Image (cartoon, rainbow, N blue to C red; front, top):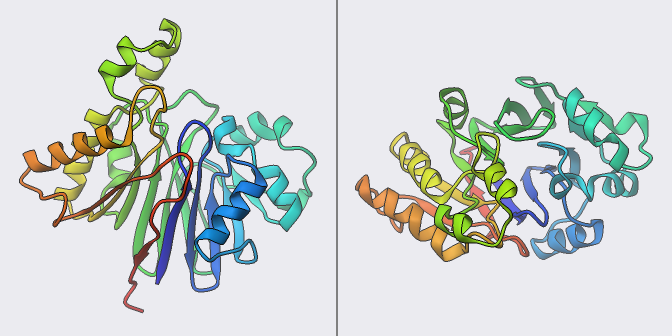
Length: 267
């Protein structure tokens, strides 16, 4: 049985837990080591099973806890060369054995878990999302997305579960208190994905067969969970997809763990 949980999701920190059999990984580690420990304990897990931390990009909400966790628990950190160059000054002293590389498009296998990175459009050195392959199942983590294109969509399709960004409501962002340059950054092609676009993508993927969705990386200032959820539900309903029966849809919150999701592999 595959076990997945978003421990934290948002601009204040991101961390996703995935496990199968006796192997587990984290995707990003953007909160303190202690908070991550407590979150893992809350879902009945510990760092004994964590065999690797996979970093999507170098922004602090994705890496701030990675260095301390690597040192404390002797966990390898995986990222591409450009991301390592950008984040290395913020990681503290690391054992060279724990500095691992996974280039864009490359697959790394740890135990029964295989991870493949794919490019995403965001204002970082070389940002990526990850496909996680376990026993014939495909899980996808894709946040910090400025826009959707055919290549990115192809990496999302045929997933059994997706954590997809639903960062902001466009009207809330435009009328909110953020300075105009920051608004332009978020709205730009290398910024963040809005609720409306997330809804369109979820509806398309649901039509293609994906049944489990987590909406993540919500803005604290320009969104709220009920709005993101309702917007995506409306997009599903427009495609005659019942969000309470035909798919599983949940919002991953910034300050607490999501519900634990289990996926049967049939093995």
